[in-house]
Amino acid sequence: MGSSPGTSRSKRAHFLRAALPCFALTVLGSAPAAAQSLTPDLFSPNRGGFASPDTLPTRRTAGVPQAPSDALPTLPDPNADLRKRQQTPARPGQNPISQNPTNQNPTNKVPIYGLPAANGASASGYDSLNRKRQQPKFYPGQPKPKRPVGPGSPVPPATPERTLGPPRIAPPPSETAHKTPVPPAMAGNVPGQPLRRRLKLDEDSFGAVGDYAGSFLIKGGLELSTGYDTNPARLNKPVGSPAYVVAPDLVVASDWERHALVADLRGSFSGYTNNMPATIDGFASPSPVEVDRPDFNGHVDGRIDVNRDLKLTTQLRLRLATDNPGSPNVQAGLQKYPVYATYGTTVGFDQTFNRFQVAAGATVDRTAYTNSKLTDGSTFSNDDRDFNQYGGVGRFSYELKPGLKPFVEIQGDTRVHDQAADRNGFFRDSNGGYAKVGSSFEFSRILTGEVSVGYSARNYVDPRLSQLAGFLTSGSLIWNASGLTTVKFATDTQIAETTIPGSSGVLVHTYAAEVDHDFRRWLTAVGKFTYGTYDYQGQNRNDKTYSFESNLIYKLNRNIWIKGTLRHDILDSNQAGSSSQGTVVMLGVRLQN
Image (cartoon, rainbow, N blue to C red; front, side, top):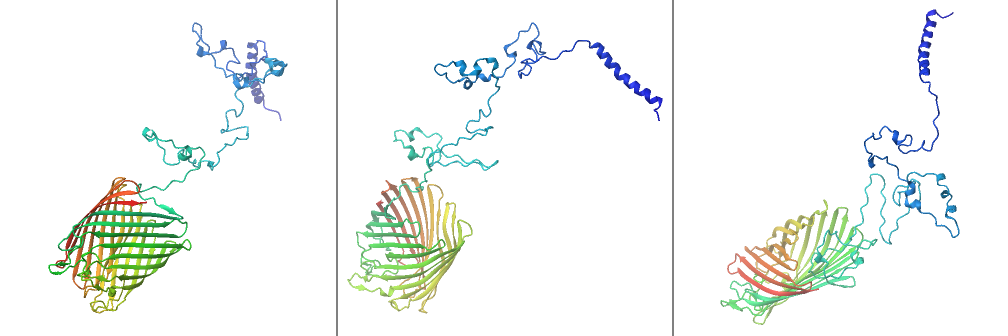
């Protein structure tokens, strides 16, 4: 079937519409065609390589001078690099042109544009040619820096140039003027030198250094002082006397990785040049004629580390002293004070279960008195005051967090006297003990110590002697108020024996506060206040003591100190004629090593 006449006419109309414009363009563009010639500037990447600068649309118009800055910029010539200009020197008898064929015809030289690949990588940058990187060289012993783990990892800190302390920004000239220079090896400034271990901070720049004997550190000292005491016997009517004190001390400590052994021995002897009266108002004096008093307190502590959590502990102790002046236990008509000695030992263990700790020990002690020498030349036996004590103590503590450890402590003992009845016919064998709760703490070294409260009781065999009981306080606190001021607080409770007829014993509470202040490193002032109560249960006697003491210490060097002391003691008793006061002024020197 043929197409309709309308369709053929439409096709011819479209053909004529396209052919007529093409014919018109052919007639108008009658100029001859030519191909572009191949020139060296055809593929040139420089600006103006395809057109002359005179024919550019951006050229300067006539009448306007062209500035030098209008010149077209050109890329740097790679041949201008000094490294490219270095050529191999010609050998003897050789033509320099024949040595480098490219120099024979400069037009045949292949141009090099830009810089070679990885030209600026040096030894640390990115190298696109993947060449072997030169490794840095370190000195022997120099710590090698660790490479970062990956993107986002922190950069390791740089090694400080000064290893002996924080860097100083601008030290004053006086620090180094007229001083011997320190070698770099001692100053820690040698590159690659291993870091030196920091020395322990010396808290007391004028303290004793001590000497080593094998693995033991030994520190010793001796105090010699003299002065005046307005009432050395603590009589109701004071009688003064010049006084002198000799006080040696010795500390020996082991320096072992495991186990420990420490000995702390301290003693003193207080002498008086004047004697006290033998009688007062026609009666025997309540104080001895010779009031010289020795005093010694020493203990040796040992520890055996079985393993990390189990330790065996032991202690040997010795206390040598006399009754306190003004005490009712002092006999009337004495020539001098009788001396007593308390010595014993403790053997125990210390076991740690993670945060829970158990410490227990068995104790054995003996107290013995020398015979009393009377003013008439006779002696009086004090065997009824001698006794043995057997007991044990246990402490259970739990570390709630670092620096805070609550505990519970329980103690019990039995006292057996050498003589069943004392000089007044009382049977003083007894059983007693105490229980207390408290905590040891350490808050950023500003406040450290231990505080506990509890209850103490003692029952006697003799039914005529009532139970000796009372509230118990014990503790020791150290508060570093500042770098120059230290405050100390201590409290203690003791149950002591007595010879007063009908009295079970004496319950002693002692409270002490001390403030140390350093005006300079070599000048220290010490203020101390002590308050004590003596409760003689069964006799309705109560004594109170007050002591105010101040010391001024001038430290010449580590071995010689000068010390001045002023102390005022008050004894306030509810018994008539038993109160007393006394003031002591002393000046002395301390020798230590």
